[in-house]
Image (cartoon, rainbow, N blue to C red):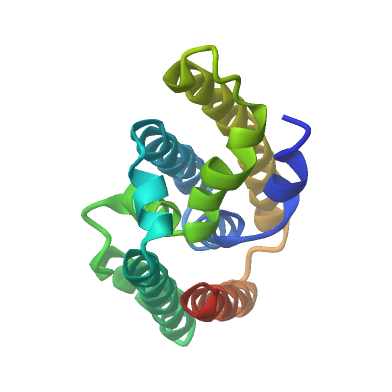
Length: 199
């Protein structure tokens, strides 16, 4: 847990998505994104347990594909978020209901941004093995470590959700929403470019 806390506190995709969802939606939207981020970690943990992540990381072509998919997805989210900030508050709400991921909701939006994040996969391929004991069940150990990771990520994102929701209620104006949406969109685009170009 001590090893993953610094990684968790560094603002990244989940942090940005939670902020954007709370500001343009509600606190429950932020909670949904936080929950989906945890599920994304469980997907990586499951892949690591069966060795699929190791296969992807050992294949240059597979890893490149994951990076490109993740980067394109984040850039797409960022551009869509930025464009929605140009509209009025009512128009933003209507556009938000028409977004491509609306059917999946915040859960699907955050889930895929985490599943397609190679840095999340690297946690289970580089960090987790340092704490495994070969004489014991690898799957059970990975499960225990992933639960600890999920608890930390959920606690941090839910805390941040509450902070943003409390601040949002006091300074909620159309201008503030537009600026924060633009900021979130810019960060997502930057994260997407970094993910796609990561070596």
